[in-house]
Image 1 (spheres, one colour):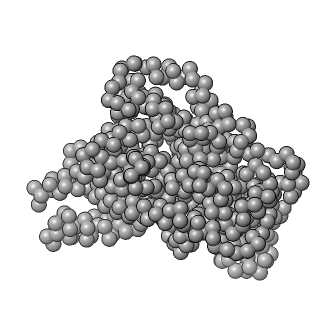
Image 2 (tube, chains in turn red, green; image 1 turned 45 degrees about the horizontal axis):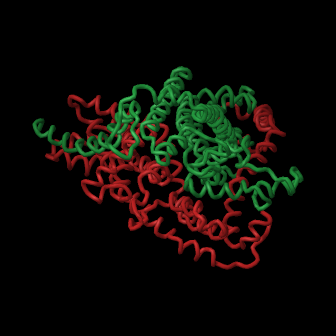
Image 3 (cartoon, one colour; image 1 turned 120 degrees about the vertical axis):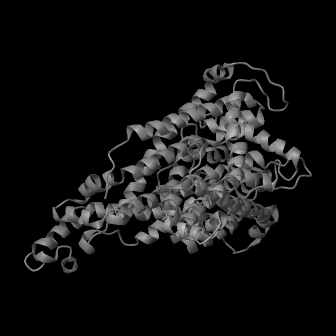
Length: 315
Length: 310
């Protein structure tokens, strides 16, 4: 350790003369918590175990039998059958996945497009009412959804009377609602981002005869790419974890209505229904199926997710 | 060029603003109006009853209980999550020994960050089912299994966790902290990494101990981030609907046993969807709104400090 600290070069001038003193100080810093060090290392490892063990336990559970799961938490699966996975898949998990992907594809595209357009105009153009609209959007980010829930339900219901494509338990209806509720944060964040971009490039494009619309799509959007990615990831997580809105808006209206449940909602319904009451392996297998794609996506993009998320919230 | 500006502005703003006003602003405003009526939601018929919904609310024992639970969540959840996340972030970024001037994270910091953050990307449904398995009341439950194995509890009288009136809400808080710490850890880590290393190195040369560097350097420089985190967590504490409604016992949207884990959002949903008391549910929405508003304002005012530039 003393050898390492020698090479820091933080204060190069002192190097030769202070060789004996500096290491001892660095040492004191590192050693100041000898016991603390063990303790905190242990705590980090413990917390990591607390996350990995339950998840692993669930995956393991999908290979056990019902009796095994009921008797003790410590049983090891006797045979590695995939029956439970087949049963879980038959209950419609694939369908819930498809529903979620359809809705998120629509709502994320719409959120990003509309959010970026509104934020850009508000950030870069002066016109009467600019401030009012901006604060309108920002204020929305502070309000809890509960404040709007009851009228929103009836608003969507009424939209359904205009066109069945828009009503309760419809993809498009939920897409529009997700988009509307993601707009405040998206606009708020991208507004700050567009303001921070240099104006010169945009001006040059305008002088070259570029239209406002083209300047936005071909000059400003590529320049704002990192900001767009950040807020995109934030919206993916937010909408993926949404539970209250689908539970309120995506109930089957009658028995002939197709089941358009989102993943979280569908899994919860399965867990609460009697269908799984006697089939814990099936339920655990369902969770494993739902968890795997997320795990794969997360592990491949974890760097971007973490970086994107923090810059989105710190703005 | 100027004359082409306005059509462009209007063209870009009209769709987002229309959508936003229709689905967000207008329902928000309607809620205030409906909260003054006895509307059932089923028909368009409603009578103006003034503030009676609100007086009923505060006379309702279940509502007061739910409010208390939300206040408990507000007190515990942000504090526990922030403290844990701060501790982990400090360990992972500047807590390591040796290396360049002693300022670096512990070994395996990258691994820990990836693992700690993972619960954040899991759907609430997965969290809920996972922890129902963990909190099972027989020996098949992971927690009871561990505690029996350690000899802490009697295998014949296992703990009831979620079904225990005194423990239920705390079990949910545990899940919220478990899943939330990773996010705030990453948030604080980013903030810590933007603090120049020279500051730590200077403190180190002056003979500062690790605890001192945390309280004298890290904490003040991170103050704004902590504020942001507190507001987020406070808003989250007013929600908690997904977990409480699915994990705690109770016929419609959980809240049991005997309303001992009831919170405002489950009560609101039950009154609206199950009992069809739309006007009453709106009044609850307004109460949740004012609590959130007051909290955010207080949080931003009281904790305001001078901004430190670096």
